[in-house]
Length: 302
Figure 1 (cartoon, helix red, strand yellow):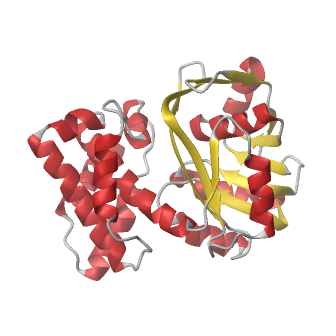
Figure 2 (tube, one colour):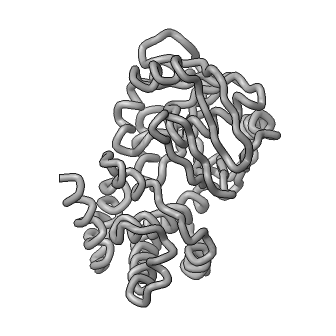
C-alpha cells in the first residue's frame, strides 16, 4: 500500500520509520525545516526495541504525489486545520485517513472535511521524543499503534492495512472497538497529562505523594463523569482500570504535553481540557480540578 505519514516528529517518525524498516512504501509530509534536517542527517530511531536509520522519502505541502491508500496523521491538535488543507490533494475517493491525535474533538473536523467513509479511528501509545539533533528517542516498552473501522467492522480494507502493518518492530493492532479505545485513551491521557503538567513532574513522585495521589483521583473522576455524560462508549470499570494503569506505568513516565512544556513549545490544552470543560458547562457538571489544570496551561500558553 502507498502510505502518507503526516509529520516525521517523534510519533510519525517512529511509526513511519518502523514501516520503512519493514520495507513498506512510506512518504513523509513535512515542513521545510524538518525536511532540510532529514535530508542532511537522515531519519534516526534510537529505541530499546532496536535502532534504525534511513533516508526517507519526503514531500512538502503542494508537491505532486498521491493519491495515497492511507494517510496517517501524527501532528498535534493545534496543527490539524492546516494539516487538513495540506493533505487534500493526496486524499482520493478510497483513501483511508487514520488520526493518531489524542482526544476526540478532531474526529468531527476530519469527517466534515473528508466524509464519513474515509475517516477511520486510531490512537497510539508510545513514549518518544526528539533530541537536539532531531533523532527520535523511544525509551519505554510500550509502542502501540491501534486502528480500526469506527463501526467495528473487520472490513476488507482494514484487513489489508493489518497485513501492511504486520511484522514490524512495533505493535500495530487492529481493533474492533476503536471508538471505545479512543475514549479510554482520552480518559487516561487527560489524567496523565493533566497532573504531570500541573506538577511539572513525572507520574511517579505525584502518585507517591498523599495529596498528589488525590489530585490524580480527582482528575480521573471528573474527566470520566464528563465523558459518560456524552454517552462515550466507556466500559464498566474504566476508572478503576485507568487508576491501576497509572500506578503500573514507569515511575519516570512523562506525558508528551509535559515534555512540550519543558521545551517551551505549544501545548494541546484546548483540545484536551477546553473541550471537556465546555461539555461540563453544558451538562452542569462541576470539574474544579480540570479547571485548575486548564488554567495552568492557559497561563503557560499566554
